[in-house]
Image 1: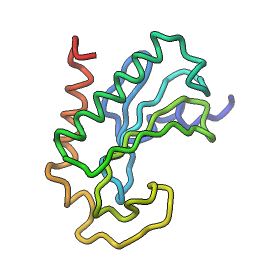
Image 2: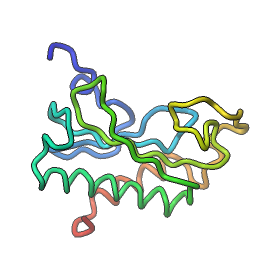
Image 3: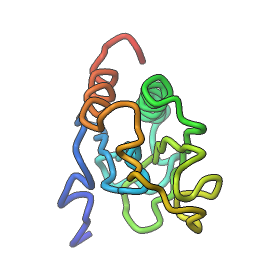
Length: 144
């Protein structure tokens, strides 16, 4: 593929990098606790991964979800794997709140309300602290 945005850039704020995948936080003002686990190779479908790779990927997703639940106590955590545009399997891990602009609709749906103050200011911890907790959890051996 001649131009691949996820080969040319991290795809967001880089939180952790491993040989197989990286974790980024998406720059989305409406959904500040929006992370992606991005498989580094061009792999389009979940079943293109070998079973141990699937396990590794889902362990990362689970670790991020756990941090979001413990640190933010969201109303719900959304998990999704779409990837219709880029040739990199990736999982979305998104903390959702009953006050967020789209709840209970999906983040790609219609806004339901205006949020003031901005969403990031409503979180119980700063994004930098949340990012650090996600990075620490992903780096912790034996917690897979």
